[in-house]
Image: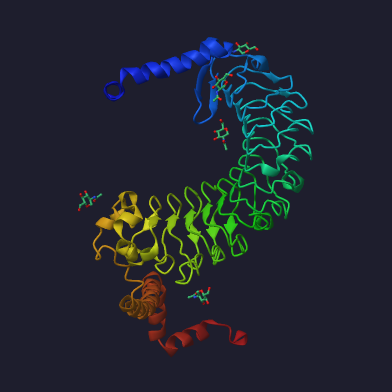
Amino acid sequence: MALKQLSTTMTLSTIVSILLLQFSLASATNPLCAAVCVCEESIEEKFVKLDCSKVYLSIVPPLDDWPINITHMDLSSNNISALDFELSHNSVEVLDLSHNRISTVVQNAFGGLNKLKYLNLATNAIRSFDENGFYGLEHLKSLNLSSNGLYFLPDGLFYNFIGLQELSLADNPLVHIDSIHFNRMINLRWLDLSNTDLYTLPANIFHTTGQLEFLDLSANEFHEVPIDALRSARSLQHLRFSENSIEVLDKKSFRKLLTLQVLELNSMDHLKEVKEEAFSDLANLQSLEMKFNRHLTTIDRKAFDGLFNESRPTLQEIDLEANQLRTLDKDMIACARVRKFNVQRNPWVCDCSMKWIKKCEIQKIYAADLKCYEPPALHNHLIVNLSDKQLECNYKDTPVAKSMVHHEHVVRTISVGLAAGLLVILAFGIALIFKWKDIRSWYRSNRKGSGAVYYVRARANPREI
Ligand SMILES: *[C@@H]1O[C@H](CO)[C@@H](O)[C@H](O)[C@H]1NC(C)=O
Ligand SMILES: *[C@@H]1O[C@H](CO)[C@@H](O)[C@H](O)[C@H]1NC(C)=O
Ligand SMILES: *[C@@H]1O[C@H](CO)[C@@H](O)[C@H](O)[C@H]1NC(C)=O
Ligand SMILES: *[C@@H]1O[C@H](CO)[C@@H](O)[C@H](O)[C@H]1NC(C)=O
Ligand SMILES: *[C@@H]1O[C@H](CO)[C@@H](O)[C@H](O)[C@H]1NC(C)=O
């Protein structure tokens, strides 16, 4: 289908000219293009791209074989195990070495790549770098070091990176990271530190990275939110903090993160409780994701206090899917002002306290999987399908019911009294039955009156009386 369209819309001549262009570069100018790589160039857009991925290379091709004006070199998904000579080329801007088996990187490996803007070394086996590992990369904008074995970063490693905008250190066993690494990254906007075994961050770590907008700290070992470090990132807009060992979020957790717009707090297996005003300081928060927290049972009704203030930009998207919430207070979330509202897959107790959810617009609340867990009669019923009558409360909670409860109390007190009385009477009766013979004989002996006494006296020795 797509091919048919292509053949009808493209004239034969354009196809031929494209083929010729590739052919000329490939055969006339370059042995790599002739042999293993897919090469593409555009004079208008000023690029010469070599795609040498997935061709089982075990070494980096000698620089003499790279086209003189190459801009993009893709060597990803090969079998390269070492960078054992200094790469030197003054037109390449993009170099992708990801998905290889690189474990050794010689000193000054990138020393001669003075135009390089983007370097991808992700998914290799690099455990450490020399202090001067990135010497010479003065124009680098993006560096991807994710999924290696990095456990140590020399102090001066990132010294050149004044222009760096994007850095990923994700999926490395770092454990510690220091302010000195970010000291000179005054243009850093995007930083991924997820899954790096971090449990703490120095208080002022981002005070020089004034442009940092995105920070990923998920899948680490934090037991509390490193709020001082976060506050040092003065422009932070988007924080990922999922999969950490936090148990409770409170007023102090996100204090004065005034620039934050997006917050992700998902899959936190230890999170149990969100206390009052936990999010109240996030004056610019627009989107909150707090889902798949399988022990989160409690969100205080004042957790979001202040976020729906008319004079502030309001929280627009709230996603609380798949927690362990049983009820939500109707004053907590101004659902009329929220664009997205997802509270599906929680064990909701369907009673009058949940009535308000039906009044939120259905498309906002993700109703398809919004079901009751209790009471048993409504188990697995869709909340939107319930009538108002079904969403009545147990009589215990309504005012009428409360007076009935009082009534019941009085009745109960009386019946307890009666029961006690009956019990006494019953005990008396039982005693009567069992002791009947004794009582009877006592009665009979009594009936004989003084005669009996006399008889006793007559038999007794008078001296003993
Ligand atoms: C690259 O260099 C070759 C020959 O040196 C030239 O033919 C080609 O036009 C150049 N390409 C670009 C995009 O500058
Ligand atoms: C990669 O190189 C190793 C030895 O260096 C070799 O055993 C392995 O078969 C190579 N893998 C591929 C896919 O070529
Ligand atoms: C880094 O590389 C990994 C693996 O190729 C990729 O998944 C990730 O998106 C890259 N990150 C950036 C910021 O380019
Ligand atoms: C709303 O915000 C303004 C200024 O930020 C504050 O003075 C006011 O008390 C807030 N109102 C409520 C209801 O919180
Ligand atoms: C909910 O109501 C809709 C339409 O009223 C109906 O099609 C659907 O089967 C109901 N679903 C459940 C689970 O009761």
